[in-house]
Every structure is written in C-alpha cells, then in structure tokens.
Length: 175
Image: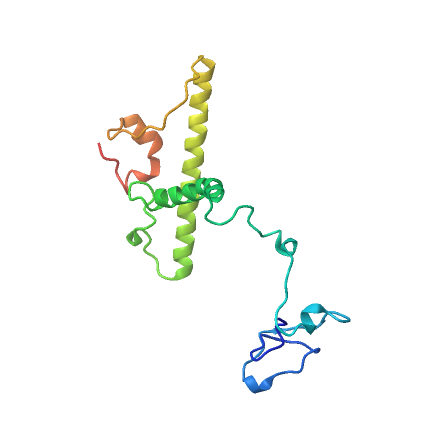
C-alpha cells in the first residue's frame, strides 16, 4: 500500500491528500513522485513485489534449513569465538570494566576499539608465526595435519618475554 495513503500514513506525497485528522506527523516527504499512473499509488490495499526486486539482499538458503546452518554456522562460530577471546580475563579482558577506568562513553568506546585492535594484532601475529612454523615443517618434509592443541599451563621464561611483552605487569602469566 502507498505509504501516503490509509488511516495512518507514514509519508506525505503531492499525489495524495494530506490526512491531518490522524494527528500524526508524516515521517517522509516524497518530493518527486512517480510520473503517470503508478501501481503503488493507485492500489488501495497492497502491492506485490517480485523476488528479483530485493534480490541483492535476499538469502540464498531458507533461514534455519540444513543448508543455511552449514553455510552460516562457521562464520557465526568464528565471531563468537573472537568475542570470547576478547572477553577472556587471561587475554584482553574486555568484559572487565575495571580495566577501562575513564569516564564518558566516548572514552569507553575508544578503549574498547583499541582493545579490539590489539586483539586483532595478536591474532595476526599468531597466524604469521604459525605459518612460518608450518613452512619450516614443510621444508623439513613433515606434512602431517596439525591438530589444535591447548596451550600448556606452564610457560618458559622465553615464552613469557616474547609472547606476553606489555601485558606481564597487568596480567601475569600463571606458572
């Protein structure tokens, strides 16, 4: 239905009489309406749009279907994993408000942004180090798939110095 028609219009259009009796202010002013007869303006009840009209933003798979879960599950898991990494007290502790002791929402947004940037840089550095290590293994003739391993509870002094540089004072590594 035309947004300028009906009992509660949400737009004001020169092709439609203004309905001031409703007492609502129109949200949108249509300054250049469609020329000539237009189906959206002349239809009294509803308008049908073909599927191609919104094709740019349409989903390829039906929401909730098996194909949809297979397609979108990995991306969602990646996002949730990164959010957990950000909030973890052992890494960046974004969830802990006592780590951001500044007043004002702008300062809080800035510190949260810098925390996300630091976490992204840590992930990039870890990725580059792993690729270098994998390259050394490949050159040595080792091609077995690498299983994800948990980090050991104990760390050496070299690991604490090289990997935990700037964070050692704020959040010491347990040994």
